[in-house]
Image (cartoon, rainbow, N blue to C red; front, side, top):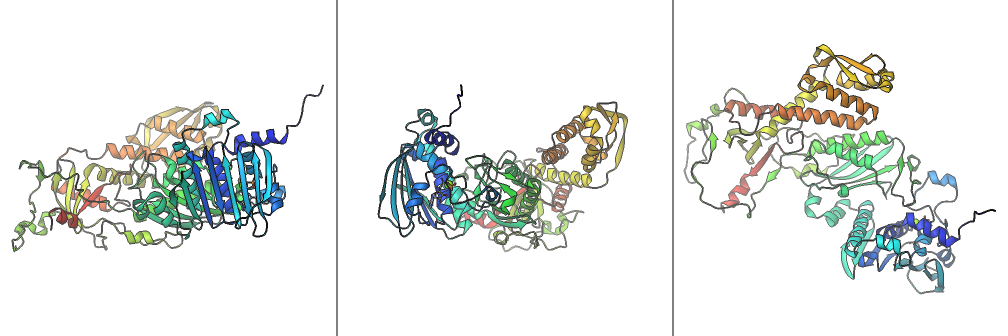
Length: 603
Ligand code: ADP
Ligand code: MG
């Protein structure tokens, strides 16, 4: 007996609804996408109870005539594609024709729409059309969704508090605002306007409206491209970071998607500049030929497949890194009123100044420079370079010019000119510089110096050391068979593996820099990463090891340094490619601005 039956349309829609819309945020996402596809310039979203009780999306887009207003609720009915070939050339956010019938199957939905001629109102309750009537309204569309999931208790239970759902809705509208700065968005929550953008097209303004002044001020414009991808947007300098990736926005052809590999590439670009474990803020719009982007992966359209994804990953990583390198300078710290305590302090401050010590001139003394002021106190190591030296600790103007691949910014990577004054608490090197007082973290500074030394060694033809006893590595049959491929991948590390039996590899010599590592576990990691084909994490791992090595070989906190040693630290730091951060992203020095100091003394 035949037992297979086709499901009725309402059941099919409810099944689709499970995938298309999980919560109010998903409904808002689908409706706003429709508004954007309709060419809207203004979109307003209002919610009650985070959208659980009701939500409305209204727009001034093209609207629909009365026939389309009804047809829009048919399953797989869409105006956006006509045939399967169009799936490879999608220029709209929607294309599946599933959202409206799905949403209407799990809520009470009211549509009011006008194309400038017809004006129509359609009411549908849990998949049943209740009424279709003429209804006076302006051109555009307004859709109200009430009592979402009221008749599907299992889904309703899945929702969290109104406040939580509200924050998800607000989040998704901010993402729309950032991906479409040319559209004016307004978000009203329980009758109160929570957020709005002007639609001026200025992304920085939207960043300000979404993330506040501080983030907008720290946002560096970027614009770079290769043959297939054009990327533009803003990177927020990593002095502002977050614990989660929620503030990393990457849009593909104006579409918000979850693209973990691309997030990772951007984080890799930030790696040298950001404190370990913290996540950056950024907004990047990536444009590409729609043929390179398969959006037909999941009904909710959050997932995509990107052709040439590796190429895009490298493009992002390299350019993010370059843009940050060109803009990251020493953080300028300001004494904050709250943190300054005017207490009596004992005279003995453990400030180990080295002879000859430059004392600050007496306030009113009309002084001739004390003999100690002679440059003689910078002994044999001249740290002043003949090249022009940037003296400003922060140069915001740099951020105004987009960083392009074709015309890189000619930024001079040099420290402000510094004169070592002394050491504080065996931890910090104090230097006078034009802007004020530079405080160098002696450990972080040396970590940076050693890190760059190791990286350089890695890039050059290294001195090879023969191992007394060759290193043997349990590699497995599979890797031994792929030995040529493996050796090609390990060429960067200057390592050559030799087969030894059917599942073991031998290494007879290692580059000199590797002797500071535990070679066997390091090489085993190389093999594991090769097996998993995670080239980027392999590079990351390499860097992590080098950073650890650099850390071990750097001067510790709590070590008194001679004047000569301190000058040497400053000189070496000055020679670094990126002197501003240790390999873990912490600053190597900060500058206490003289003007701020003067203010503290009420001058
Ligand atoms: P899709 O967006 O995938 O085409 P939907 O179910 O979301 O499917 O919408 C069905 C159709 O209804 C759309 O193709 C579009 O023609 C029309 N439509 C939906 N929302 C709007 C709107 N806000 N303005 C104009 N037309 C709309
Ligand atoms: Mg749609």
